[in-house]
Length: 244
Image (tube, rainbow, N blue to C red):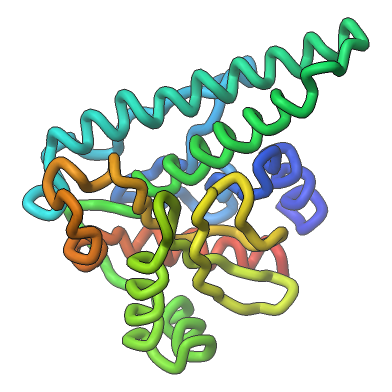
């Protein structure tokens, strides 16, 4: 896939300003299969909830089974349903030339779209088998953060400092050839356009409250025990190749 084809495909997923990139679990797709990494839609274009790439209890003791079931089957499914509804209503507005509710449905599109795309990346960013960071990813982390340890400290601090609900995000900026850490306090609002998430951490309370209650910091620390570095490395390397 060349750069133009990649950007065209990315634009189709950009309703919320964030690129979803969902599911290969432990085994990365073959070279050139970047757009097959995540399952966002079915063959008809309807947004769908892909199954987890591991068992609900696979990430214990760091993330518990009850939280995974509630988070994936209820919260993420809610984003998928909301995104399909918003998409349908905007289509009807176009067909009827009635745009009186367009502000509402565009907001719904952004909110649920961001929730769907980011959660899909989140599930695949984790695994009971962490793998290892690729040499290319390690080199980029060192270039942009001084060292892997510098990145880890910044990512944890950014994730722990999100006010109310949001995400910690490691994203790649192809135009600057730079990795950046972002704190997204409202995932539909706070982003940097043309920054592609490669590692995301959900710090909404529903992601950790059953096990960690108000101790978000403990949850953020525990997340580093389940990061799927094979997935993160693949996302980064494929992005860099596709957008070179």
